[in-house]
Image 1 (cartoon, rainbow, N blue to C red):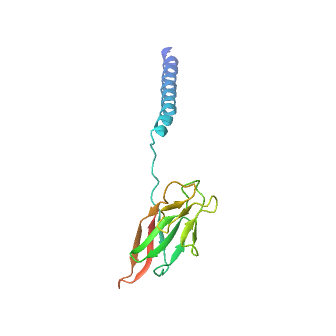
Image 2: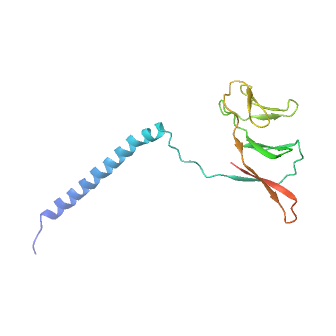
Image 3: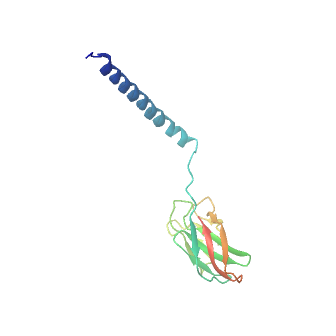
Length: 145
């Protein structure tokens, strides 16, 4: 039986080579991550579809956790409930006919446009699809977040 002394050395060499390549990969990822963050690279989350099964009259509204759904003459509109200032949850103030942030009193129109306060941007508006039954009667709304 012949003994090959190079076999263990080859195994060690192979292990060290893989260890070095793995370390280089981790180092490259660690260096690229801040660069990608700096350039604004983000992976957008998958959209969520929320069904609202409620009859909303013109001039009415429906408040959900993430949005407020308004029914205008021209159709439905969903506005985000996250204030663009610091992310507080805004509320529909029916008596004032506006949307207001309880944290720092930023105010927005029902269409999400900034009126006053420390917020500098309008509230995001989400697409709304009207759901109808087979007879064409409206039986809900689908809001895409």
